[in-house]
Structure formats: C-alpha cells, structure tokens
Length: 431
Image (tube, rainbow, N blue to C red; front, top):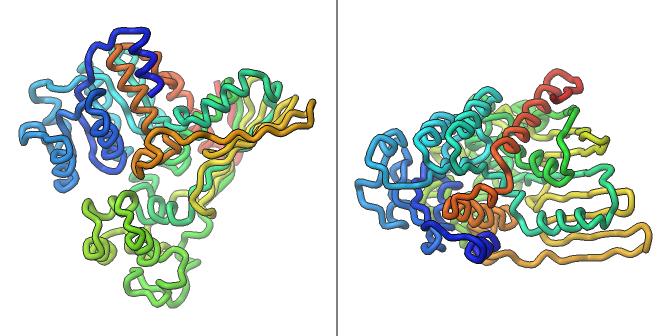
C-alpha cells in the first residue's frame, strides 16, 4: 500500500472512489475483488456485464441493488450518475466505445490492456483522454510489481553501469496458451488482437520502462507452428471428453482442468469456463463450450511463438521472446551492462559486479496478498496497480500512475510496429 501511505502523509484524500465495473469477467472480477478487500479505499456501486451469471455474482459480492446492475454499459452511462470511476475490462474489441464515452463524460477511467485492437483506435482513445483531462490508467501491471521497483532502484544506483542489452522472456505456459489462445477468447486476431498485442503489450511497455529510452527500430519473427490441423494425431477426437488420448495428451482439457478441480482450485482458469466451477459444471462446459475442443481442431490463428528485436535511442538493444512451449512461470529477464549484469524474475534478483567479481542474490519479499489466489497473479502487480490508481483518483493526482496515457500509447505503437515488421519481414523505424 505504498501509494496510499504516501498520499495520506503528503496530500488530502478527497474521498474513496465509487466504481462502475464495465465487464465482470476474469479481469473485472480481479479488480472488484481488490475493492471488496479494501472497502475503506473504494466501493463498487454498479456493474455492466452481458453475462447474467457473472453480472449476478458481482452484484452479490458488492451488495448492489437491481437498479445498479446493467446488461449493457450504455444503459449505465445513460442513467443517473452514481460513480466517479469506470474500470473497463470488456473484450479487447469492445474497449474503444466505452472508454471514449466515459472519458468525455468526465469519469476517471482504468482500461484493461490493450487499449484497442488497432493503432487508429488506440489513438482515438488517447485523444479523448487528453481532451477530457481525466485521471486515466492502462493496466500495464508489470510496472507495479515489487521486483520491477527493486530492479529500477538497482539500475538507478548504477550497479551495472550503462545498459547495453536486455533479454526478456515470457514463458506463457503450454496449458495457459491452450486455454486462452487456442480455445479461448484471444485465439483469433479478427475477434481480438494479435498475440503480441493481446498478451505481451505490457512486456514491450516494461522494456521501455526498464531501459528508460524510446525504441527507434524494431524487427520481429514468429508464427503459428504447432496448434494447426496438420499436427492433429490420427486418433484424436474433436472434443477431449471423447478422446482416447485424454490421459496422455499434454493439452487434454479433461486432464488440465481436472487437475485444478482435484487441487480444490476454482478461480482462473476454471472460472472462465463457468462462473461456479464444480465437477458437473466443468464437465458440461467441456462438453458444449469452446474449452473442451481438441487444440488441433480449433479456429485459432494467433502465433504460438514470437521474437522481437529492438534498438533504443542511444544504441542499447533488447530481445523479447514470447513462447507457448514452456511451463507456466514468471517472466525471466537478463540485463547486461558495462559494469555488471542482472538476472531477475518474480522471486529473485541476482546482481553480478564485474569490478568486484561478486554476485549478490536478493530475494524478492512476498507482496501484499501473497496468500490470495486472485491478487497474487502477475506477481502482485494487479493489487499494486489498483492501489496506485485508486490513490490517483482519490487525490485527483495522476502522478500516482506509473504509465501516462502517452507512454501507454507509445508502447502500443511499438507493438504495431513489431507486427508490421513480422508480417513484412523488415526492420521498421519508429518516429
């Protein structure tokens, strides 16, 4: 709670923000969960969500009356104003219209990444934010993790001299990738966004944040290589429930989701299949819904591996690797400097000094809510983002938000440049 502590010491808190949740899926539920755990900091006063069960779950959690529950955000916007702030966690393609409408109406806005699926739409949202002058944040949660703060402090102290290059890896995880990007909502570019935008736009934002300079040129390679019909085993069924390979296939939905159930885990990803995960409801979802399909019999088209190479102003370089072919684990980063090098992930930062020949190993302390299966995701970044954003709204001071609207737009434009480079097989220079 670093943000609120500093705000209380140095500024006057206006009042706890009243929040309208636009979208009550996994991300909306996460931010709503933080608010429920901190009722003195903020309150959810309304929800807009088309899915009736998810809408009802949020209403029950936050004690909302029927007049504060909407199937469509437009109905919430048209009624009497009861909220100060809107948190938008709809599907990617549905960000633009509510973001612009609520910004122009003077609401503070926290917008789930990506801002929008296209560069033109991203610019429209940011222009609306600039015109309105509202408190605005994009959910680039990696900026808010404790290990990011530790890393930034070490770099500012000059512990490894000047950064020469960075190697950053996002090991998405074979099961996570199959869930979200083969069977799930982000499997197709035309329904959502390219993989680099949908999953990794905050990684490219994070690299800009760590290096501290804009990117001037980018290239990229990658594609969809494995999750295609040509790789389907001959004996595989269209649905995992009917498949003879379900006990041995790494991507069996029966096996993967069953392991979560057996462990008593009913949050993400099971909560995406059904709002109230039980053995019966999960089985029904696998029988009739998209998450029970064979991974080689889906309509997915996003890449399953991608590499991005960047050159920053000043000459430093960085590579980013996104891969589906890993276990699910935190991101891994190596930073190479003129006087030393750093390795870091969510649990440890290891600093080697070329001058002393010594290596210091620094454990990353457990973050707030480390015991909370919802708020411990993203290495605690979700909770710290909410802390910062709510403080910014309560104090009417956007400085609590690490990424400005312009920085968020720059990160997205870097993603679009990288995708252009991948598709056209060339180096793209950024303005």
